[in-house]
Length: 96
Image (cartoon, rainbow, N blue to C red; front, side, top):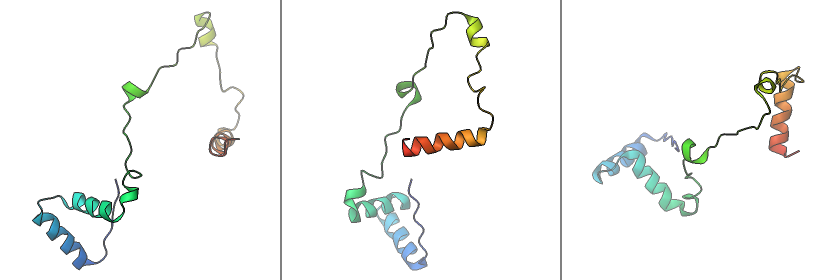
């Protein structure tokens, strides 16, 4: 959602009046005005909402026995979590 802050009290009142005159919510009316002024960005400002049930998936690891899962320590080599997470973020954003 986009938040627009109007510092001019008269402009705010005019927009609110017109929205009420057309029987619309002020936020919807402002969105329509912005869509008229900036038609190219309308699609860029909307995103498809993902559903976890439809778009997510469970990762199943094949293991020889239950002992392998209980003895697993995947982050045992990590001694400083702050440094480790910082390097992960840098690698993810910079694609290193």
